[in-house]
Image 1: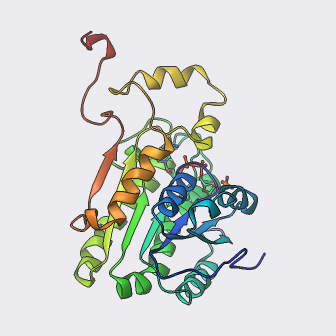
Image 2: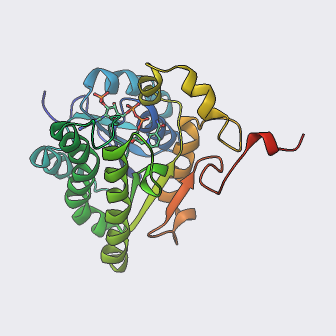
Length: 265
Ligand code: NAP
């Protein structure tokens, strides 16, 4: 599959790159950005998913291109940014591609640990590394979707938690390194979000879903659109002073100890 599949010529407007755009949060971010008129360059390893998500973009006039790539393939990611830059530069990256695997350190094999760290942490590094020269040119914005597991422990999610803590540290360092060049780097840390990833995690224990939903002070899991709205805000002029922020988007789940039994009313 070649890069730039279904490419259409972009107009003089914001150019946004969204990874993990074939599903869940990334798909919602891509939709939100083309709804505000951005050219959206979507990256995912699932090309059928990319085609499906992008198929109704025309109505909003903002869709530009889809790229099939694994975010752990640095050479391919470098080539994609080079191609996108020929169509007018890069104003923002919202990096959503990620994987989750369940397991304690005792249960998990080394290959699974490496896989999770490679996709979630090294993938973020590769995206940032190859986007940065173009973001510097346009004084752009890099937003990574980490997780509430990036700021606190999560039982049974050892590798995922380690990878997301790594993403938070990486983005904070990027904010210090590249803020002076005009590039803003921020992290969104969602709690549970209703996506195919969550369905997969609860597939073996469906009763966990209701249990965990009760642990959220706002009483529901996030929708992908909740995350997309915040990602769109961060990369917009309204977010111009946000840099190095690690933003909890979890309905209050990480605000402190919560007991639904103690909730008034
Ligand atoms: P999702 O529905 O599974 O979507 C993730 C997308 O990323 C999928 O299309 C997936 O393709 C793609 N992807 C995975 N690994 C990739 C790789 N190496 N290269 C390219 N594409 C890859 O998941 P989501 O819930 O939207 O999650 C998006 C991000 O939010 C992830 O980083 C996740 O850790 C984070 N997050 C999710 C939740 C939640 O509750 N859902 C909570 C906090 C944080 P495949 O289908 O082929 O894997």
